[in-house]
Image (tube, rainbow, N blue to C red; front, side):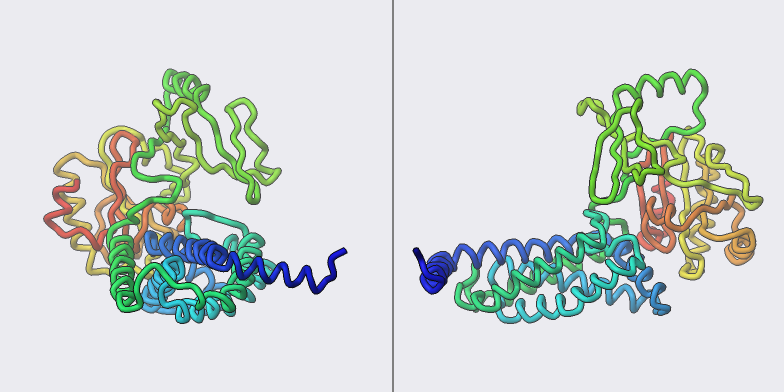
Amino acid sequence: METAEKKHTRLGDFMVRFRKPLVWLARIVIGAIFLISGLSKLIDPWGFIYKMDQYLAVWGFTFPRTITLVGSIAIAGTEFVTGAMMLFGNYRRASMWILTGAMVVMLPLTFYIMVKNPVSDCGCFGDFWIISNEATFYKNVFISVVLIYLWRNNLKIGGLFHPASQWLVGVLLWAYSIIVGFIGYNFQPMIDFRSHPVGTQYSVGKSDAQKDEVDEELDDMEFIYKRNDEYRTFNADNLPDESDGWVFVERQSKNETKALKKIHLDEVMTVYNEDDVDVTDDVFHGSGDQVVLLIPDLRRVDISYTFLINEMYKRAKEKDVDFFAIIATDKKGLEGWRDISMAKYPCYTADDTDIKELARGNIAVLLIENGRITGKRNISSLDEALAGTEI
């Protein structure tokens, strides 16, 4: 019968013999987690900024948007670059220090979030992959355990690139992260992970004949719901009770050749006029061209854009394009916006979360054609000439 000492020796021999593949496996797993986490935030920097604002609001802090932006890009970029360095086996000592430092902060923080639940999810992977606060904490425990192993073995195994060329890989990765973040912040995310990307078709205000047609289409649809971390598909005849914790995620065609995302607008947002009357179906009537101005927070708006907005409205009116604004505010806020911006276009209100789900930016522009989203732009990416061609 083997003694404990012999078993320990055999385990040690196994770890030495297979050290190289084990180290590379650990590098790939940890590097991929941080790389994906950082890249998903860089693709959608506004989403990470909103999440940072949520954290700061919980703890009673408020910072200027510039500081939040710089901090968000710095955190996401560091995650992405350091994750890639770990994945490649480059800067082995520096990457270990940075990732360990991140876990020193994130492990107790995610434990606090799991216990106190101040936010619905940590935002670790942005909207690309939403996981529960409990799963986030256990993920970080796993990362910490693997990092402990790497502290003993990472320096003993070389990387993919020669030490003399490591700096070039790092520079290219940082340049890439800055470009991706710049596009996501000033235009729209390069990849839209949200539930209403370009191409989404909305069904609103249907006539009886159209409703019959929609009912027929529902037979070819399946509905995806989420409860905790479980996703399940249902058909139109056995939809779950949302009181049991099921939350609607999306619907899709069973026939892949007919796959066209179609959502009823009530699942997107509810739009109110200044008298708090629901005018969703009247505003999004589903016919013709529409340009929708989306403002999730009036306090963050740069008033200098009001001239451009008024020019866009003037050109839209000339082309018989429906133009209106949806603002996360109340009746008093609408009146203030009209006074400051000299707005002659219709203005409505909606929940700020719903507005942020549709498009990103302090002022975003949503283009709709016959009920189908055809474009999203941050107003900072438009100028007077471009606005005229976009409408």
